[in-house]
Every structure is written in C-alpha cells, then in structure tokens.
Length: 44
Image 1 (cartoon, rainbow, N blue to C red):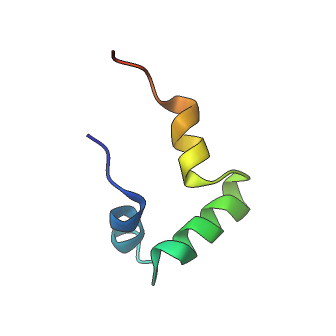
Image 2: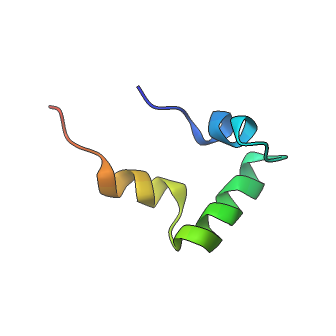
C-alpha cells in the first residue's frame, strides 16, 4: 500500500499538499502522479 500525496506532504513538513506537488514538479520535472505511474507495476 502506498501513502497519498497529502500524507507525504505532511510527513515531509510541507504546509500543504499543493506546495509539495509544486516543489516536486520543479525538482523532478514531473508531477508526483506521473512519477508514481512510471514506477507502478501491474500486479493483476
């Protein structure tokens, strides 16, 4: 099971999930959703 962006943002000390998403995209070049999708495996 994976943690949602909201939970990750709080644990990482960001003031809001939006701030985390914006910083993630600036640093990684992709959204958290796109990043997660790139590494997701299909277990079904």
